[in-house]
Image 1 (cartoon, rainbow, N blue to C red):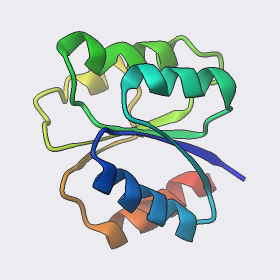
Image 2 (image 1 turned 90 degrees about the vertical axis):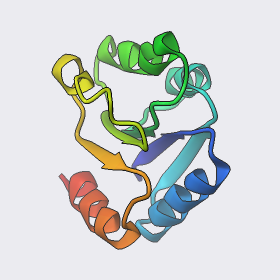
Image 3 (image 1 turned 180 degrees about the vertical axis):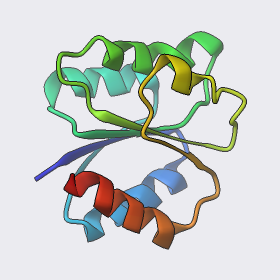
Image 4 (image 1 turned 60 degrees about the horizontal axis):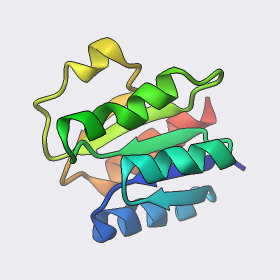
Length: 117
């Protein structure tokens, strides 16, 4: 079973992601902050991270910097209403940028394909 980490402070968004991953029969972990997400990564082998971009300029990349240094880093998807930071894709390996709000059915198909690789 694949492990998914959802890092987002919006509880409703977290619930939507959890429902999607439940349909795909995947185990989800959640964290309300990037720092809490790093703590999950220290304890659990995560296959995919979905994170938003909210937070201070430093906090935005804390999680991404940590993942970048991992031996076997998980895939990363950025889901955010703020896409001023598309340049993140130049510094980090980002699978996809998903704008909020998103089309649940479309993302379900994408995630199923991505996690089947």
